[in-house]
Image: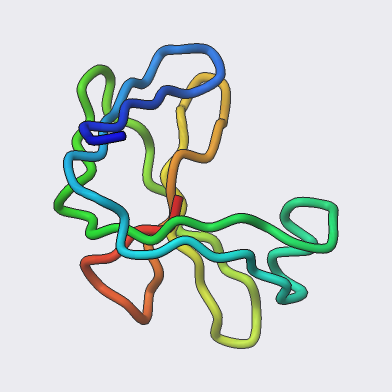
Length: 97
């Protein structure tokens, strides 16, 4: 399957596409991911941020304070709050979907 890979939020307000192959896929088992998904593991796809393009309605960027000096950048639909991707603070230029 070749790109672009298209996606949207739950309410379909925001549309976006990935215009390149993902850098990697993995299953994360860290406690943050477990808490986030409510299960033992969370599937993650890493991409270059410059390859993610919003096609319809710009989503909101939120910076979450996780305590102990940790932050998470989260991009989500302003209407339905579907998380579309995260941007790791320690890896500029990357996104995790």
